[in-house]
Length: 439
Image (cartoon, one colour):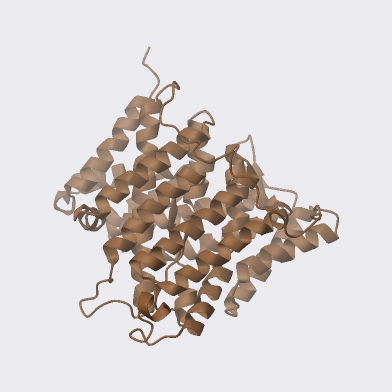
């Protein structure tokens, strides 16, 4: 049956190798079932329901990727996109997280339409490479800022310094610091599941030192998903809601599309899955799966779902077919029974995981041409504005507006294209709408 479904022999693999690869991918990305509920509770969502939505969205989308696109790539709610959802979109929409889920669903519809047409390739190629790298780095800095705040390392300050150090001798700071060292040390030694090991180690230490609450049991019935299931809607009476929704949908779409395309290309190259022309087999199915996965996640009650770079660990372990993704799907279904353990994980235990993901995301800055100031300046503005404004949308908008303005004034307007112009104008329009009326 497996041979008929996945052509294992043609891919020079076996059932055992694919199962080991699936288990490896699962261990490297299992942290999301602890981290995502903690992030989305900041939006006022029910933690148990988000836990169930996270596990189910991973299972359904990874199964679809494995069975339809036939690729060893797992999907889950994207890091960075969940932070943007919880800390930017939902507060801007007056904490109407149901409307925010509606924005996610709409971005998924647009992604599906783009994925089945040549528009996706045109749009991705049209965006400046420097800004694409800067957006990823900016999101990484954003995650690091949130992680350091959750750990208590930094805190807000009403003075001109904006931020200041927290009480660095507090138990949660010390425990988070220990988790930080554990995760990075294990990752440096290429230990599978380093992030999850770090989260669990800090949780155990917190309970042992009286800074956490031990669960009454480690397994239990899956939590109810009723609090988030099909709760999305698409209308609001809030001021400027239309502009906010449009901006949120655009950011979800652009970031998800860039993230997915980059991840699929990277893991396929690493696994030798590209054809003789350097193209990914079933690329359109893979992108459509990711887009549909975003819609599934919104319907279940979570932020956009995207392909996970952690799938590269499974490919390194020998995964070559969709069976690897199917194994990940089955394991996340079993994780539904771990909700008592997930509920015992404190916020400061997941903070080191946010910083770890941030490190992976900012490394692309080294590929920017820093000698070309018309590329370097907008890139730096984007990467810094995202965390400092606490908004991915604002950072992207500043970056695109600066890119167009600098290129035109420097008489480098031939470097521009219609896609960049349109996105920049869209953010200019948003700024105009958000401006208070002149007196």
